[in-house]
Length: 52
Image (tube, rainbow, N blue to C red):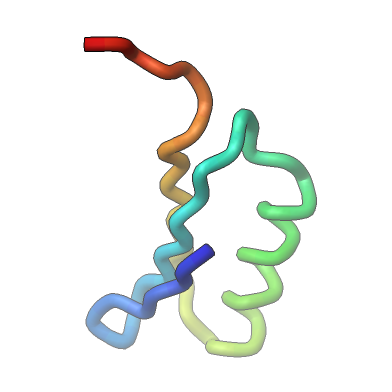
């Protein structure tokens, strides 16, 4: 899934999964460590499907 750096300060990771697992959180923490950033967001667009 795409990973973006916003304004050189925020790591934004886009997911489309049922649940955010511990591995995703650990990966975001690792991105923070190597980038020296202080904020990471994981946006999840998976999960419940709504029919229109």
